[in-house]
Image 1 (cartoon, rainbow, N blue to C red):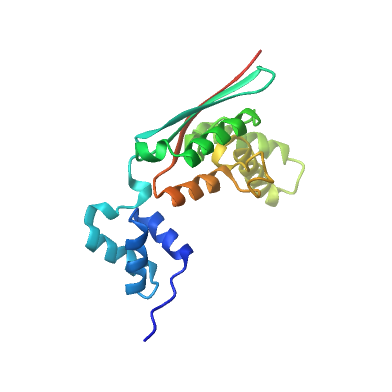
Image 2: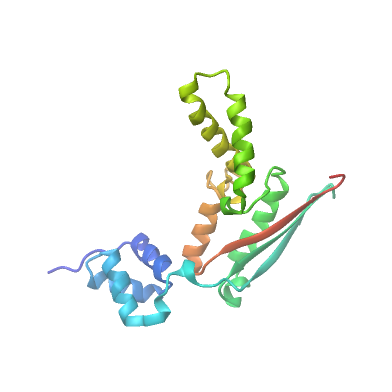
Length: 202
């Protein structure tokens, strides 16, 4: 019987799920005929605590990156974390942090890193405004319009939901997609922890 062909994408996905080394992932996938779930189970048995989901590992290393616009009127500090000092010093990781700082500088509407940071009170307040704005529409579609506007608002103010300002370079990917790509590439939990944006006169 011929061995199944294991793609790099499958190996990357398993690595993202477990944090296990590339060769371990490939071996597990080969032994389970490409079944991701079975491979996760096999790695957990074989590697024990070392094969924990990447997202569950605490990000306690990282970097603080800065960006100051050429006119000196806008500046950003952003903290991006990972699991090890080795990755924190990696050029791809450092570059990602700088690109996030640049993006925030160009996106004055950004208020939160994740949707979870928005309080229910803030969401409810926005929803009430959007419901009033839709008051001239037929009653049965007003809630849907308001929900759509709330989603659009969250895309404007939540960093991870935004498309990177350099759309050509990053092919229209969102910040969260770029973060996920780096996490898969490094095998570590990449977390944008916090940011502060300074603007002269604000």
